[in-house]
Length: 160
Image 1 (cartoon, helix red, strand yellow):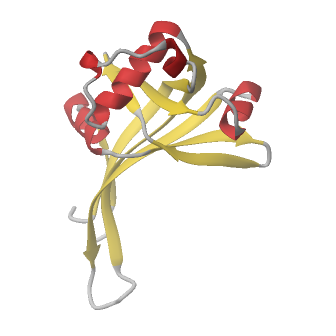
Image 2: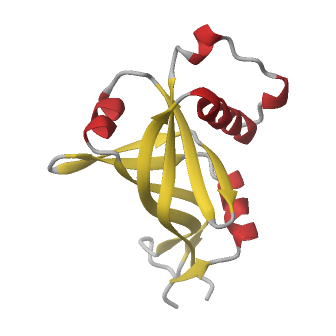
């Protein structure tokens, strides 16, 4: 049976995927080819609106590219299983859930930077409620916010 992509529209299921996924890949415009980089992320999903947050160095290729063009694409996935089909050694299929989308990415400051940092820490098991950031710490890195203009969540399932 051929695998099928099923769109997920239930926001509880989308939230579950965002919690479970460990990496978000962002794609930035780098002229002839896109520049794709995997990053740890935090997120805010409210009222159907998705915001993704990333921490990064203040200088470097990502920052140069987004200053030139702040359009971005993103992909987040969670592998569920690898299923062997038949006796053919090449007959492996992946079951996974993914979110893909596009939006605008920008460096944030002030309370938005702290909010983004707290969401990243929360996702990876930190306790942002008890954390105070010194000005020196906050000035040592950048926080990026990607506001999704559109996104789609799908499940690729070989059992349908």
